[in-house]
Amino acid sequence: MAIKLLIVDDHPMVREGLSVMLSTCDKIALLDSCSNSEEAIVAVSEKEPDIILMDIKMEGKNGIETTREILNMKPQVKVIFLTVFEDPESIRQALQAGAAGYILKHVSREKLIDTIIRVNEGETIIEPAIFNQIVHDYTRLSKKVAQINQPLAEENIETLTPREQEILSHLVKGFTNKEISSATNLAVDTVKTHLRNIFRKFGVKNRTQAIARAMKISRSPESALFYNFRTIGRE
Image (cartoon, rainbow, N blue to C red):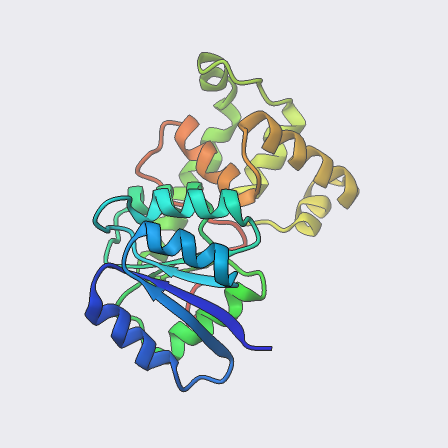
């Protein structure tokens, strides 16, 4: 079955270009293209896309706010930000909103299609042009996790146990549940329980949001991370 795709961008040339670029791919079914947040929310409700290609900066409500609203309404939808913004703060906000991908608009047709397919299969994809900065930042953040309880307390958030801090440090390094299990000598189900506790304390729903929350709490707004590191064109 073809992947149902929705395009959201306030530039007509971008929408038309993407529509033409993807129209000949039999693995993707383009449902519609929208020029603003309001149109996108209506289209998501009526047409139920699998994937949304979302711009960040749009007139009216931006892509970050639109994504939050869409995922609150339809949490199964996966959003890929297709943008010109390479700054870490934009990436952090995108991940915090629940993005499943972040790529730049100069991406080739082949890589764009590959990204859509891989995100639909459950991967999180990020543009390799900013991958090195992310690696640097996640290394720095992982060192801050051990000191995360003080800022948690300052924000009146329930503090993490020593085991939860350990789990979080592996999470920001991109470890899967199985890899965390091996590193900590815990059963996978136990790891999942700790992760659920971390999500609850942080007030988030998934791994990506937990990492973004950890960045914010650790006072690293310039950082940008994602779990299970995968980049376009890298294996």
